[in-house]
Figure 1 (cartoon, helix red, strand yellow):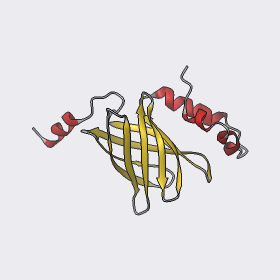
Figure 2 (cartoon, rainbow, N blue to C red; figure 1 turned 90 degrees about the vertical axis):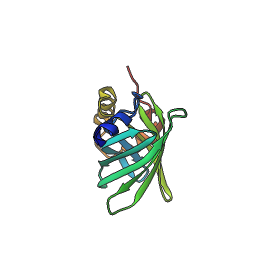
Figure 3 (cartoon, rainbow, N blue to C red; figure 1 turned 45 degrees about the vertical axis):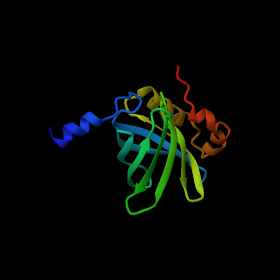
Length: 152
């Protein structure tokens, strides 16, 4: 067998961790709004590998996951720049948790791009926000609500 077919056979079979395109965002205290990310992630044999981009620039990611505990952690290394540590918990709507760079930290949420209801929910929330720069005021009052999408 070729190495590509061996690699495909090693892909994670848990439906919560599909290899492929994922969307997501992270929150920063000094910046209003979400830091949107677009990425391609591979999950196999407890390992995470991937690449993506956000407003900072392109990056690569390597890490691990544990299906028994649901814990996922990885390092996002911006090309030629700094690295960010991510630690989160797997759920039916993706991975949620915390990121950290030296003394800065915040929350994040990523999910498979095929979860259209999650994509649409966050897009609607962003479109409903006032355009006068007061995102942080309304956002900080309901941080947990912003990270817990209401699924109708």
